[in-house]
Length: 154
Image 1 (cartoon, rainbow, N blue to C red):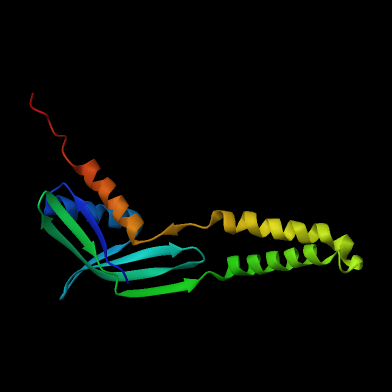
Image 2 (cartoon, rainbow, N blue to C red):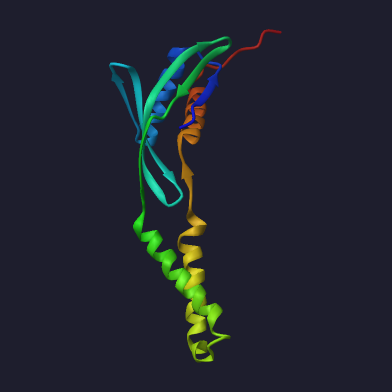
């Protein structure tokens, strides 16, 4: 799995506090283990949902800190109910396309069109993705929100 990084202007202790707040918001778990700090992150990838886990490090950088997350384990499962709705939508789409070749199916064609469009509106238009990149984006927002205001000298 690819490595995910985020560079922040805050010190490492402030970045770690932002990481903890973002983990609480996402329902993720941050554990201290023998090998270091591990992040257990719930994710959604389209029709798959599950958990990814891996070590996370907060390192000092030249102008702040850097958060590095290396996912090592993943447990993703397909959500069955949306797949069933999509299969019904495919059946409706096939029924809608076949009626010109089999005129006896003409009375069922509107029902097939409704099934096909229903699959679109119930499942495909609502697909979303929330993974490690989105989580680190939330950490960045938390870090900016928790950072003290800077005063500019004139």
